[in-house]
Image (cartoon, rainbow, N blue to C red; front, side):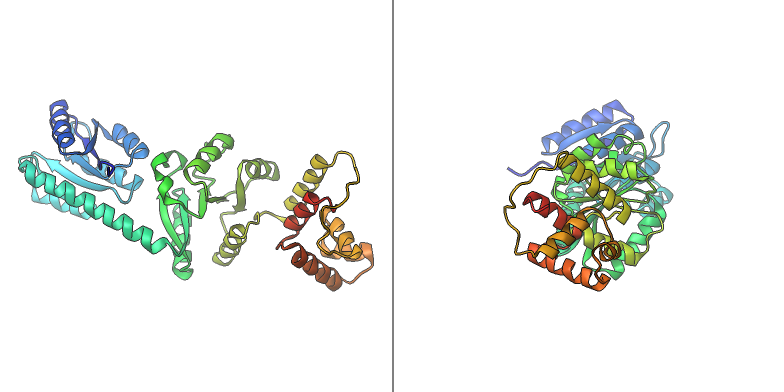
Length: 355
């Protein structure tokens, strides 16, 4: 049985709300009601509303301003303005705002119902087209309203057609559980727009993982210190990008994250590796390797040096080799172990008791 389309009615007249709710419910819709902007926003944040019927003139609020606010929460939302006093000027204002339609409350029910069904069909059509177009692309969901980054991301997407923007949310609390069907590859979370939510990120990240289980979470517009980054990595963050990240670095970072790497500084990477080794090996106990992957003694020696967080240059100094030779050995190690980064190599070496 197909899911019922959800409709929201915004009007401060209880009799109007009750009448429209009963009628549309009998027509097969799931109906929500709100008497003001605040109530309407809460419903749109939490429910998958297809169409909003908004009264043009509430006693203390402007229906067009309410409509604009709701539209900013969900760009696919279709809004129909209803008014008991239609005028040419207000109709033009509604059209300029990008609303779906403008109807008089005296319009007969059949005509209103046709408009609602038409709005639902248009929304479903746009959603289907968007999802079909995005199937072969790397999909992104952005959580944040930082204007400069949004503009920068739009320019990035124009130059990198393999990426696409599925959805934008004003902040983390605007994400709805019903959005699990978006299934993005990347979740870009603006730190400055979500500062209050990221103070205690564990529960927030857990909820985001439930809604977007396959998405890799990346913090953007952030200037966190290493302690905060460690906390966020433990919660599931895969990278951190400062506010001044250029398009070239953005692409490099996203590609690395999609390949399974973590985009952090070399210094923090070395710290995390050292902590991992300390946590997993408080006492050095020899265990026979499960597999050496055909590594030579020299390659195992270099692998141990990598695990200590030494740079290629530092390893060359320690082992009296040229830096080029160290790089060659590292390349052979990665190839034999079927990994792409030193972090992955060290993790695998620990798993198989090589180091």
